[in-house]
Length: 291
Image (tube, rainbow, N blue to C red):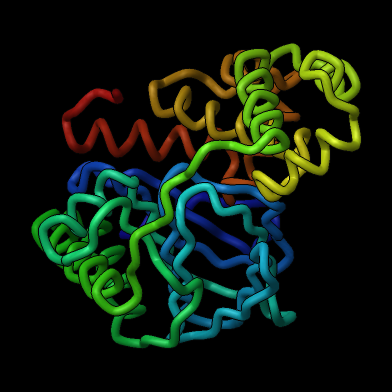
C-alpha cells in the first residue's frame, strides 16, 4: 500500500519524497500540488519530471514553460527554476532526482556523449518517456529493484540519445563572475553567521549593487535566496544522516525549526519531518544505514 506524506495541512495536496536504495543515487518525488509553489531554487543533480494530471508552470531563466500530461521536464544541475500550478486544480506528477554521477554512468555506457552529459532542451512532449518515469516510481514503490533500475536506465538513455548534449566546460572566470564565486564560497563557509551584502561586497572590494548584479548573473538568484537554498540542501544531507529537524535547523543557520520547516517545505515539497521519516523507513526496510 502506498504511503503518502502530507506536503501541507491542505487535504487536497499530498507528496512523497524519498530515497530508493535499490537505485543508488536516485531520489523520487510523487505529489499533487494545488496552492503550493516552489520558489526559485536549484539542485545538485538532475530534475526529470512527468506531469500526470493538470498543468505545472515552471519558471526557467529564459522564460516560463507549461508542463502538461505527456510532457517531460528536464533540468540540468544548478539551473535555477521555480514552479507553481498552471490551472486552478493544480497538478500531479512523478519526478526523478538522479545524481550527476548516475547520469554520467548511463551516458558513458549507452551514448557517445563526451564530457559532462546533460540535456539540451528543458521540456519535450514524449508520452512514452513520461510513462517510463511513472513506471520507475511504481517499481520502486513495489520494492522491485530490478525493474526500477532497468526502466530508469532505459528512460535516461533514451532522453540522452534524443535530447542530450555535452554541457559546456566552465572557462576562466572574468572579474565580475570571480567576485560572485568568492561570495558564494564565503556564504557557504559562514552559513550560520553570514555577512550583510554591504560587508560581503566590502570584503571583496566591490560595491553592493555590483556584487548583487554579478551574483544574480552567475547563479540566477540573489545571494540571500541562494543562501536559503544552500541551507536547505545542507539540511537534507543532515536529515539523510539521521539528524533531527531541530538540530539540522540550528546547524545550517536557521533561527529555529519553524524557519527550517517553512523554507524546506517550499523548496523540497515536503516538511523536514516527513522527509526524515521516509529516509528512516527506507534504510530500515533495506537493512542499510544512512551514509
